[in-house]
Length: 253
View 1 (tube, rainbow, N blue to C red):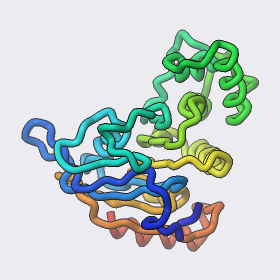
View 2: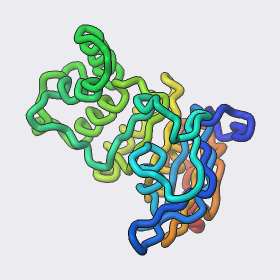
View 3: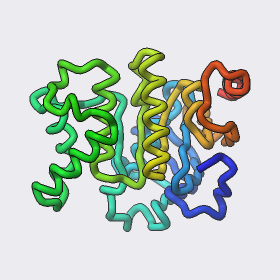
View 4: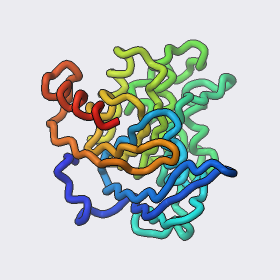
């Protein structure tokens, strides 16, 4: 789905109005209003401490909002029950060291009602999808950082989410591996059509991946601007059009 998407007409994945969040005396988010269309890739961009992760935690249902309203796929968040439709990929890969790759991926299904054979089938499908079949029996300590991120992504995808939330999941990777994971994410998005909302402080990453970029002001976090990106994909970081968008966006952050 491209950045020309009509957000007002497209089915909504998230619709937030006037979200506020405070921790003790610290106001973290203030009056956040945001729409995310189904199938869209949205980057939430801002400096450290602007409330990006807090916003993601509210969208995921991990945190309640103090004030304001949130609907998920047209359903008020307090009445939304299909939480398995939302997967969350954290900044750390959080792999369990005593489990193999396939066992780590299967962990995402342990709370589901699927039978053992169906779980095994789903794990096998995701291993194939992300190119991890040769590493199914490997242990986390045997994997590179990029491979560990791939396993974490596979664990998120095994539940077949309609929405994928990502909190700076590639920030600890070297530039080459990060680029490979960007390509992998875009490939999977094209295959599944899932909605992706990801937090980043990396302007180039936002330009390479997103249909739209939401820029937050810090302390408290407020929406300063929402920028649409109409560049065709794939977006090569060294392409002059991409570097110009990066330059312009950096002036906004």
